[in-house]
Image 1 (cartoon, rainbow, N blue to C red):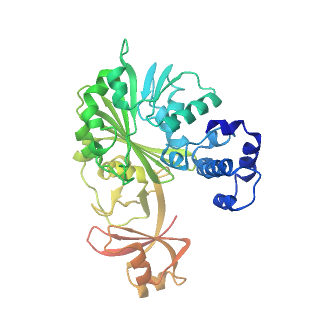
Image 2 (cartoon, helix red, strand yellow):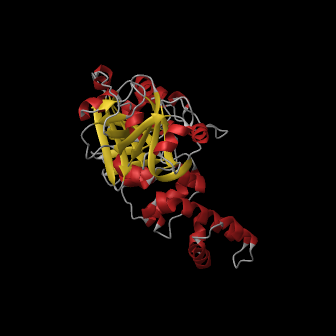
Length: 396
C-alpha cells in the first residue's frame, strides 16, 4: 500500500481532490488513474477529511498514509493525545495498543525510549512509514499483541510507564462497556502489567462507570476525565502499586482555546453536604467533564455556590463567578411549564431549551410549549428545591 506514495500522479490526484464534497463520486468519473489506484486514493481522501480537524499536525503532511477511515475515527485526537502526554515523565514507556500511533507520537516526546505495539500488520506498516515521515527516532515498533509483549520481553529494570487503550468493540463491531470484556483484558492482566512497569495509564470510554472501574483496577491513584468542547471523549485511570486512602479526580474540558479544569478527592465528594437554595441571580451549568467526574456536591462547596436541587446539577449564586468551568447565565424570569405563562415572558416563542431533572424530553417539551429553536434566550426546564417543575428563562 505504501508504494502508492511513490506515484506522483496518485499524490497529485489526492492533493487536487482533498476537499471534494463527495469523495465516493470520484469513482464514477473518468480518471487518469487505474481502478486500483483510484480506489486507494479515494480511501485516503475520505480518511484525510476525517483527520483534517482531529489530527491537524498529521493532516498537514501530504506523505502521511492513513490505514483506513476507521483508524482515524478510533484514534485519539491530537488535542487529547497532547493532554495525556503532559502526565508522562521518565525514561521509558510502552504503548501496548498502538493503533494509528497518535498517542505514541506525543508520548515519545516525553520519554527517551518508547515501544509501540500493534497486532494489525497493515496498520503497523502504515505507522512505521508515518513515524519516518514525521522524523520520530526513539520509537521501537513491534507487530505484537499486548499479551505477547508481556510474556516475551524482559528488561533490566521496569519501564516507567505502560499505556493501554483496550478495544471497546467485539468481532461484530458491537460496543462493549465492561472493562473485563475489552481487549486486552486489563483486569486479568493487571499483575503482569505491574511486572513490566512502575506506572500504568489506561484509557476507557466515557460510558464506563468510574466507580466500578476503580474497583476492578484496584491500584488507581488518579482519574482524569477529558472533554473537548463539552463532549466527553475519554476517561484515564492512573495506576501505581501503592496504598492510597482516596483517589484524585481531575476533570478537564477544552473550550475556547483553554482547558477548564476542576480537581477534587473522591472522599471529598462523598463527605460533602448538599447545599441547595431557590434560584438566585446567576445560574451555572457544569461542563461535561465535571458531570462525568461526579463533582456534584464538592463543586458547590469549593465554589461557595448552591444547587437548585440534590438531583438537578444546576447551580446558583447572587454574585457572579468569573471563571466557572461550564456555562454561566443571568436569570431573567421563572415560570411554569405551560404555553400561556411562557408567552407572557417570551412572546416570540423562540429559545434554546435544555432539561435537567425534569419529567419530559427536550423534544416533547418543545412541542408542548410550541417553542422554536435558537435565539439568545436559554431556558432550563428543571425541578427546584420545593419539587416544583419550572422553566428558568436566562441569558448567557
